[in-house]
Length: 358
Image (cartoon, rainbow, N blue to C red; front, side, top):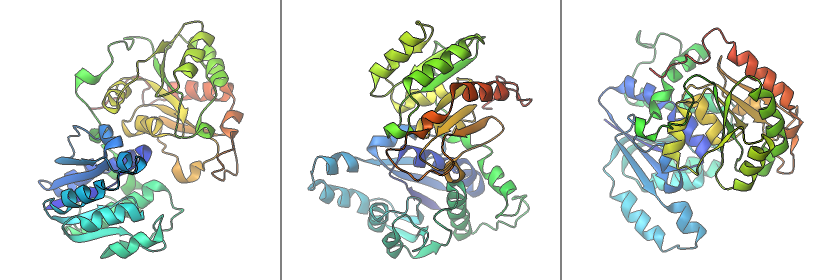
């Protein structure tokens, strides 16, 4: 049995979809599972023990550079892939549907016309599911995965699946081992992590400025947290000036991390004790790796996107978010409220620092 998954982008969406890989792998045993991804995001799944092959294509890079001649090469590469028994489009875009249409397969599974982000993508599939587009992202992904399992001959009423497929308990069961999709070798881990102090990671950037907590708020938060004898690490991607501003605002009582690739980010995330940042893929990676986190929302609705657990929580600065790129309400969240939530998670009886990836 060969299973292929098309999820080209974005970082956060790839992370969410990939958290179902351990469940898919354990349910299907010795099947082959491949992933088709844009090369811009391949690092988030490189060396994943849950995948047999990661097929990476520089689609975004070539289209951005107007190298449309690359499409001929892409078509040749996709059409020459070994056929799949089931191919899933977990993205629901016309782009991802066209990619999947080219790939040899028996069944092509995706979101139905009223369920996909781009409705016309549904025309490419021979098997579709119905689920409201506004449903929580985990529910949408879970329904696609369970349908794929049924196509592969798995009976989800079987005793090995101890909960009803539509229940929250079953979703929790599906995600119980989600960290296994992202764990990396020790060589990617950060030696600078403190052995006894809590290691806190500030994620200071996101895809949009409106989804980013301000430097002044990070400084105010950091000053409060330093009173609890923590070690603060500042993760940046492009905005080194913001990282430097936060560092100086904390009087040098923090560590600015070097610019990292996604494999290295996965490595440090495995060892941190708390990640704090906006609604962005790297913050969601903490949840995926089952590390404590606080996600800060402003212009996006946490009701649809929040990834929560006893050690993963969120705060929102807007009761009625509308995806407005000029809505900076994330900064309505006070550093004091973030600090208080940090203390609450720290005292979680499940164990704040003993949380294991075993």
